[in-house]
Image 1: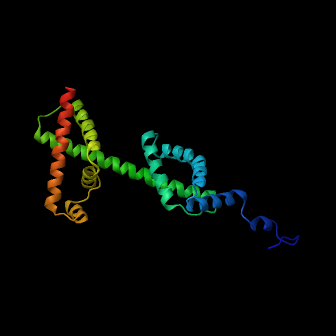
Image 2: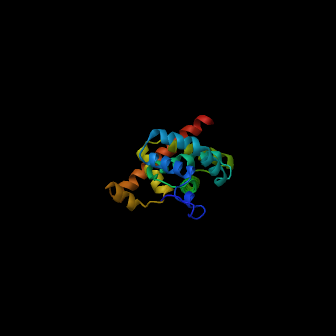
Length: 203
């Protein structure tokens, strides 16, 4: 619509979005199209902002903030779409970031719960140990978990971290409940052997 002297104040400005809004719309459209240069622009403009935002969300935990940032960026790659304003785009990014941080916290709590259960199980089968020995055991267990093959570590994480039942695991893999229980038993024995071997070398 052409602007004239009879047009109400601000009509010309309302006819077209401002430069910043045009820039965000163009940037996010290019990102959604998979344009590499657009993702570099996004990274330069937003990664530091998101990192600082996540440091606040995680109460200054740099490792948690870094992990949550990587997870949020992956979600942005999967789900990005065009946004017409910077405010809407930033709001969407913070939702992704908060969600990623919450997922990291839940995973960490499940991991600690698994360590607690393992320590409790160990105390039922081994002589009581002092607190510093418990800490060493927990650290050794964490390293033993990381050393497992991906399939075995994934099974442990789904069972003990995500709380998936044996029956659900069996249904997902096409195995019987007994087969899954047997596999978990072998993995627990493998973990214990790895931990005992590490602690033996430390002593």
